[in-house]
Length: 100
Image (cartoon, rainbow, N blue to C red; front, side, top):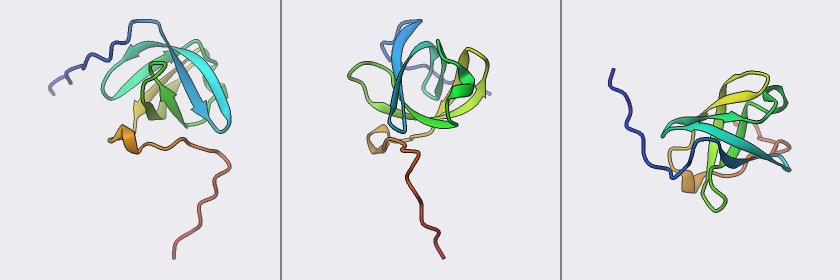
């Protein structure tokens, strides 16, 4: 399997970022970022939902994330938005109607 090429996100190791979910905004630290996901540190892994939005830079785009693994002080996430401009914030109290 060929390794994915990493794009230059202009993100330094241990770069500050922000997690958004429901009406909460929480700071975090990115210790590793690739095109497909990130390792987030400086958080209590058990306190976050399985999906949330992540802003990598202060004025950067929001990325929709799915938690792949968690420890006491870190999260491993996969970016699930293929088109980040179409990403919408996740709000926990949004109710989806069943389709027939």
